[in-house]
Image (tube, rainbow, N blue to C red; front, top):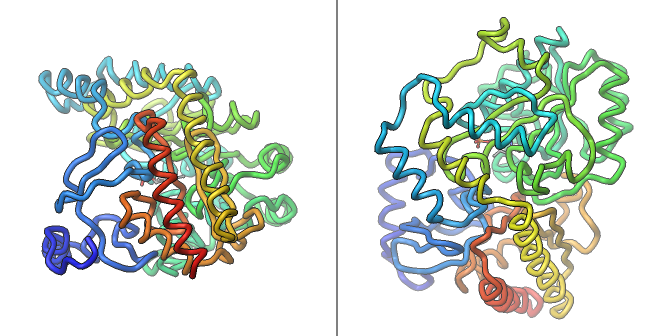
Amino acid sequence: MTGATDTASRQLMSRARELFPGGVNSPVRAFGGVGGEPFVVERGEGSRIWDVDGNEYIDFVLSWGPLILGHAPRVVLDALEDTMRRGTSFGIPTELEVRLAELIVDRMPHVEMLRFVSSGTEATMSAIRVARAVTKRDVILKFDGCYHGHADSFLVRAGSGVATLGLPNSPGVPEALASLTLTAPFNDLAAVERALSQHDVAAVIVEPVIGNAGFIPPDPEFLPGLRTLTDRFGALLIFDEVMTGFRVAYGGARERFGTVPDLTTLGKVIGGGLPVAAYGGRRETMECVAPSGPVYQAGTLSGNPLAMAAGIATLTSLTPDLHDRISAQTLRLVRGLVESAARHRVPFSANAAGSMWGFFFRAEPVRSFSDAKTAHAEHFRRFFHAALELGVYLAPSPFEAAFMSAAHSNDDIALALERLDEAMRRIGAS
Ligand SMILES: *Cc1c(COP(=O)(O)O)cnc(C)c1O
C-alpha cells in the first residue's frame, strides 16, 4: 500500500468520508489511534483478510473478537444458508433462540435465565437497568479503562475508542446522568471499598479481564474482592463478558477465576460474527424483566434467526479441546513476541488469557489504565504500521486487545512471528 497514491482503499475512504462521520461506522476504525489511512476490506477466509487493493493480512483483530472460528467458517456459512431459506426474521419465538440459550447456560450455569439483544451496548445498558430496579438504587461503579458500550451511563472515563480519541466524557451525556456513575482504578479494591461505603451503589460492573484499554488481567485477589465487597454493601456484581465470554476459558471468566457474578453480559463470540448479545443471571433477578416483571426491555430483531444460527454453529464447534488448542496458539505467539522484543532490546510486555491477548511497549506489567497510558505511544504507532505493511493486521490502537482464532495454523503463527520480528527490529533500530 505504501507509495501508491490512488488505491481503491483511498478512493472508497474518500467517498465514505462524505457519507459517515470520519468515514466510518465505529470510531476506532478510522485509525485515529495510529494515524494514516485505513484500508477497506473486501473479503476474509480463515486467518486472512484481503483489502480492495488485493493486499493480504494475517488478522488478529477478527472483527474485534467475535470470529473465534476465523473468517467465513464452513459451519457458520452452512448454518446461515440453511436458516435463511426459511425466513430471516419473524419477531416470534423460534427453536434457534432456545438452542443458543441452552448452549450458553450449559457453559455458564450461573446464568440461569437470559435475554437476547443485538449489541453489547444494549446488553450492558439493560443489565444496569435490572440492577437499579432490584436494588432500588441509582448509582453504578465502573473502572477506568473498562468499556461497556456507548450508553450514556458508561461514557464516563471510558476506555477503547473514547480514550484513544482523548474524549474522557462525551458531549451529549447529561451531567445528571454521568454523576450517577462512579469510577475507580482497575485492581484497586481500596478505592472500591471507599466508593461503596460512601454511596448506595446498585451495581459494580467490570470487564473481568480488560480488553478495551489494551489487555489488562485482574490481580488474583481483585475479582474475589469485588464479590466480597458487593455482597457486604448490597450491590450487584456485573461481569461484562461481551469480550471475555468464551475466550478466557471454555466457560468464561467464572470458570477461569472462580468468582460468580450476579449478572453477566455477553456478545461478540456468541453471535459468531452476526449481531447478538445477551444479559442474564439468576432466575429471581431476571424475572423482573418484562413481561415476567416490570423492567421494560425489548427489541424488534432480538433473537434474530440468522444471528442465532451463527451463534449456535460457533458455540457448538467451540469444544473444550478446541478452546485449549486456540489458547495454546495464543501463548506461542505471545511468547514469540516477548522473545523478539528482548532480542531487539525493546521495552515490552505481553500477556494472554485463553484466546485473548495483548501487549504494551512498556517493560513493567500493566495493572491499570493509568499504567497503560505510560506505554510508548510512538513505538506502538510504528510497530502497527510496520506490521500492516508486512501483512499482519493488529488493532489500530494501543488500547485494544488482540485475538486468536481456530483458523490460525502453526504456519500462520510462525509467519506472523517472522513478520512481527522484523517490525520489532525496526523499533529496536530506531
Ligand atoms: C465490545 C464491547 C461492548 C460493546 O458491544 P457492542 O456490540 O459494540 O455494542 C461492551 N462491553 C465490552 C466488554 C466490549 O468489549
